[in-house]
Image (cartoon, rainbow, N blue to C red; front, side):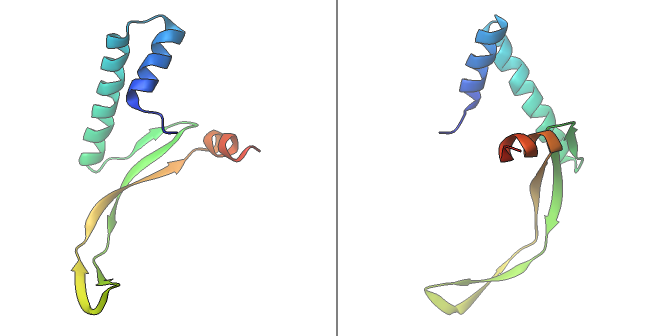
Length: 95
């Protein structure tokens, strides 16, 4: 099962006693600032959680598996990469 933004808002509101609207506003504003920083090409680092960074993916050639003779050029583009922090890695891996 996937945790949604709504699930996160409800859990934080229940644990902190804050109003869900306030929690939603803080989470949304946080995500907006992360997105804005990445759009500028800046990295976003959360200690012990992980690092988001924008990388340039090179242009490459792709093929349709049903028609391998057809060659398609896939243009270069920017992608967001996430590298988990040490604590996240150990928590997920169960070490």
